[in-house]
Amino acid sequence: MLILGLVVGLIISIFQATTQIQEQTLAFVPKIVAVLLALLLFGPWIITKLVDFTTQILGNLHMYIG
Image 1 (cartoon, rainbow, N blue to C red):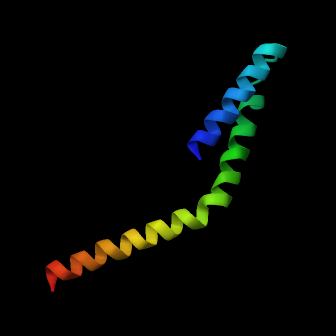
Image 2: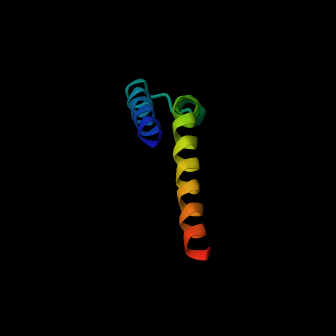
């Protein structure tokens, strides 16, 4: 997600440099949209990884306590 935001920001910066448009929202809005789309795309995978990690940590904690 961060790499996608970086790439979109770089493309927008090059576009702004070539057209000499220095509008801040032109750089901000596409990056936010790209990161939100990446979050929608990668969100289920991230949540699965977080749940697996939490389950593993709690399982290890139960093993040490019990």
